[in-house]
Amino acid sequence: MISEAAIDRIAEREAATFRAANPKSLELAQRASANWFQGVPFHWMLDWPSPAPLVAATAQGATLTTVDGHSLDDFCLGDTASMFGHSPAPLADALAKQAGEGLSYMLPTEKGVELGTMLAAMFGLPRWQVTTTASEANRAVIRWCRGITGRRKILIFNGCYHGAVDDVFVDLKADASGREPRVRASLIGQVQDLLPTTTVIEFNDIAALERELKRGDIACVLAEPVMTNVGMVRDAPGYLEALRRLCSETGTILVFDETHTISSGYGGHSTTFGPRPDMMVIGKSIGGGVPTAVYGFTDDIAERMAQLNARRPSGHSGIGTTLSANALAIVAMHAMLAKVITHDAYRHMLVLANRLVKGIEAVIAAHKLAWHVTNVGARVEFVCAEMPATNGSEARAAMQPRLEAAIHLYLANRGILLAPFHNMMLLSPATQEGQVDRLLAELGNAVVELTDG
Image (tube, rainbow, N blue to C red; front, side, top):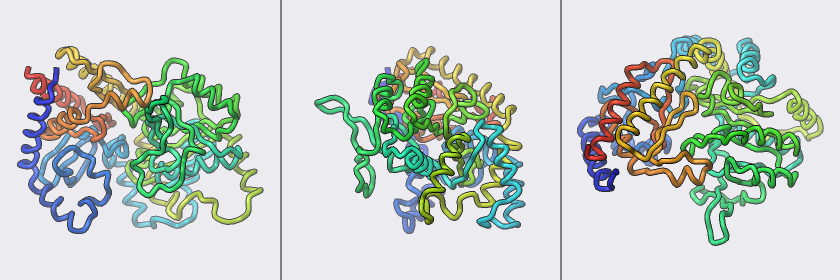
């Protein structure tokens, strides 16, 4: 129902509208190109489908204001980093206080002791460590799993994303003989062949999972309980339970990266729905946007880690950085867990997520679109394909980047900011019903124009 010509027409018009409405952002982009490589401090900032990135001035709650004076209903929320709202008051107050008391000591603090107890209570795992990013946490977890099992391989799922960790950039690619693993060709400067130490299979494929784990050479399965970065791929009924059982039977450590799926409910997806992993990684939102992450693990894993430490030579373990667990990160997480990431916050977020899902379904039905909407708690996406994907290959095939970009820019020009990655939307404790309703109204308008009414 949506032609390529309609997509081109909307995309060209909206790009021109963007340029006219955002002269200061465009001027700053031009100035930035003199010193910043590719014109931005970090390359992710180029992933927006607009002619140039909007330049942010301030953000509060679920609203972002640009240097051109435009206020946008923010459903991107820093791609999860600010999922619980921009600068919630308890976080802002804690950071301001800590800023006058020192930022990094390389020493523990009293709030750090309290934070450990809070993490255990919220996520159900007794032992924890702090890193600076989720990428660093995943890298540390992979090292620990290989070290304590004596196995070299890890298992991941096709289309996964676990940050900037070399080991996970292996995909299944179709060739004449079927689907074969390949190191991702886009990696810059990759010199190590990852195939001998990384096994990749499709999500929801129990037969492949059983085959690979029963070889007995997999140190850990690193997974999201629901895939979120290649679109959203839900677990088939019974799949996560089979994953838990097979890991236990084969001595494989089950690691859930819940950096995104913390959107499912208080304590994350595994706490809300099960099953429980042996280790868990959480990044981005746990510090409210302050760079920090954590990984938690069972008492049994902690004992095995201690045994490994006791028998290895002294020297750097390859795990950690000087800024890991700095005082600012600790107080940020302490404030978030104590006063922001609460049961009440989730109740608000999940009610609004349901309102958004039902509203998008109504838009799809009204226009007889072969689309669907899916959500992982407070994380929502509409997908421009009829059937939900069951694995990463299907999810990639369903993507329509040009159509998604045209809709994204249409909404941005009308004061609604979605994530630049397949138009993901987040609901925060600060998001209001009116913001959801504006999004639904403008999405409906976009569909009318794209389908010529």
